[in-house]
Length: 262
Length: 269
View 1 (cartoon, chains in turn blue, purple):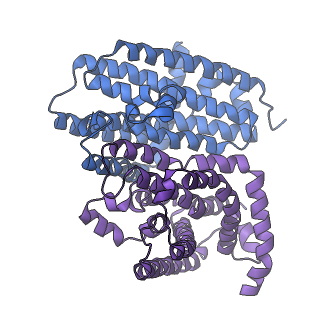
View 2: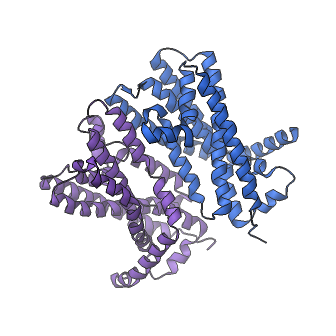
């Protein structure tokens, strides 16, 4: 276990060093992030300018959901996507061999291979959004709420990581899959809205199939003070379920890996 | 390169492009699925408009607007900017330049060849548009339908020219992917793709009307949903503006290409 922790540290440091080489990226990523945040926020404010309450959500309450979304998007694009997208490339040209030869778990090695530290700008943006939202609400989140939200965030990250692993596993079976990963990132955009705003089929899909509700809506509800034991349990169950399925699928996919070089 | 040589090469390039689109149909379908944002926006707006219309948009008008938006983006969408970036970085542009066909013309023909497959992907949405109540939110004027085709063609050209111009920046700054991302973010908001432009407050609307982006999506969509029915004169002015922006974009492309290609190192290849 300590060996894995040390390994993680080494990989993280390598990513940091790589990122420090391109310091200008920090500014550029910041600018790009600002524009993307505006595509999130402008439609949001336009819709809420037309109606003060949508699907039971006031503007500032829904803004807490947006904050959760922006933070999680940062985690997805900074810590999950960079490494796992590299796997697709490695599978195609056969360099996954070098990873499999190493005496450590392959999934651990590939999923800690690369981080984009500059994406932590998203967390800063998210915190600003939280600050604006709670200022508007006129009350800070309770300590218990923050604790529960943090726990739910952890579950959400597990699910995000598992879904991405599932997508990457597909690359062992179909070769041209690079854009499948863009698909998830694009669909994830829907998580910026409270899941209960959606009705009918979309709400079911976003709660159970691609569980956006547990990623952004439930943590936001916890921050807003609604402590719901059911959603806490469901959140943990989804995390465990997704992790188990993705681990199984990954191991099975690995078995069908036909090294391209041999 | 003369017009004649383009005409001679066009059928072959189009055939190859169509064959590629058919061969990688799964990939194409995934790309189509990444552009489903209008459906999410439709769900949000209809939830917001549940107790009365927002501006001129009731449930029917919203459905017509966002489904039309999806269809228009399928037909006019362009990925040439990303293509040029990859080709410049990996040196594959050298191969393209050796062919007796201008690389930009070749990109445009490849895009044109993918339109039938993309239209096929958009067909179910068109059926929904025509078969449900959303139909009453569409244009009923034959003049509008005819000029919609003109507007779609201009929107297609404008979008691909903007892609070319930003893509050619890669000659100067190694990679213009971040510029493309910023463009995409501005495009989403300013083109009417995520929010109908007349829902914006008046000041923002005026600012947006001075930008080229609304000619990429909003104008064809508004013709589609019958905003210009019986207003041929107003529509002519809009189309003239659209054509003007397309020419400006073409000028930028010519400038960026001729300046940029001189700096091209053609490494790799």
